[in-house]
Picture 1 (tube, rainbow, N blue to C red):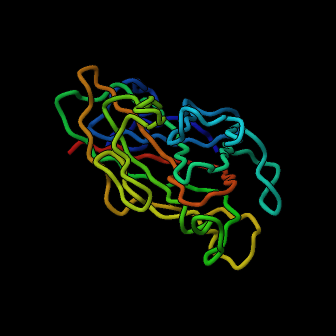
Picture 2 (cartoon, rainbow, N blue to C red; picture 1 turned 120 degrees about the vertical axis):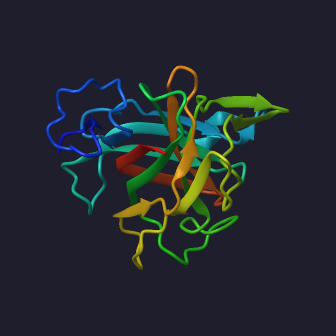
Length: 233
């Protein structure tokens, strides 16, 4: 499957391969990212932990790697992990989109394929490793960054708090694998209500996907595919 950014017209979605990839064509942009070769412009960040805490204990890590068994180990995904020692770690991915109309407003909808091995009803410290880890998705005219505020590293956009969404990110589910075992499975999570965003003066927005954790343990997830559909209102 070709992993790239497809810019297409609402009326003629086929045959627009020659269009400029930096332009919004008739109000529709589709960012379709698989991770067979590289991160496709997505950058990983971590937030919501104390300044005085040793970051080594959080086991922050990410890489393009093969999917774990029993999934198709010939395929690759973007693995992201952390050990939640602060009861509130946020692991996020961000990607800039350019060429939008700075005078327009857009909606952003997501379809995410996620590899997870945490089953519903599982119990852990602080909460369930499945149902207390909330998957969020959204968009912002400003870049999401990790910043220090009063001795605590926070993300700069309004993502809400754990089970609650914010102005710039919504909850689209948890990381339950949907089966009664700890085997890895690819699950699909889709936005039911798209996020609304107005680009900055340069016609840019930042896509953001992440997990807000109430489970105080190790979480290892595999982003197999992220599709963001950006439509002009």
